[in-house]
Image 1 (spheres, one colour):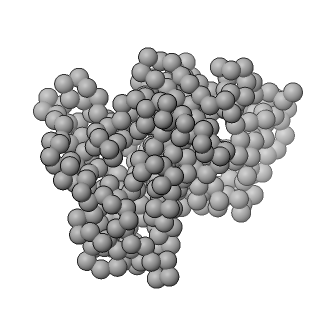
Image 2 (cartoon, one colour):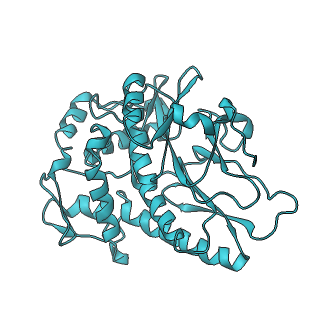
Image 3 (cartoon, rainbow, N blue to C red):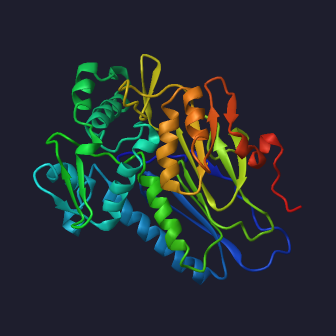
Length: 358
């Protein structure tokens, strides 16, 4: 968690209330202190006071989860045992952790097979090598290098997720491999966003949209006359804040829209782009697509699936998605073309969907 990613991968299509719309009103806030991205919270509330109270809860939870899931910084002086702490200590003895961290690790381990092994939080040692080379390449592009395959192969020997020992009764974590390292980046933002959504279910603010980088979580429909929120999928290399550079618009509510792409965290070596999404089989960044967007109910699950789908060839990726219940996807290719599952066409602007009440 080193670099603030601006702009966000998925754009919220902002729209003011239609003329004559009554209370509640639309409010918004933006945070830049969690998960190294821009997080925007837009919601309809009965009063500024109601929104302010809920917004403070949302912001506070994001800040806390950011610290729990951070692998690069310690917060032990605040009494927080996080991923960084686990990577330092969990190979020596079981470490007791916050339930919000334990359940994330359990969630990712339980769904490992659902991603065909493509999304693996135990790949921290391998991803750490790519992270260090990417940071060095960004700091000095003229000297940017690709990690040596020998180092990647050696790290890959310590990525067995079955050697992550989770004790549900004692809420402890142990690494049964002294060189194992965790990296929860493939699921952390989505899982955190879903926890925020669950919190919002117990408030008076149910009509909302959250954009956390490439993770968008939609609550109930907007209370301004539209039947759905509009979510813009950014055109790769486009300006995320420009509506003219949106590859696709989806009209949705009560679900999650999560994108994995090669155009946010990357560096170049000899004119070749190397993204942060690493294939556990080749040990190299995936290069089949510019982005894959997954639509399903749970944001954490969508986060895992979007990474997995990005790392497979198109035929495999599409078959993978279509074999999952209640999951849809949109693929953007290098040549600017796109494909989508049949189930999402009714929500896609390019397929004729509109965002007006009939």
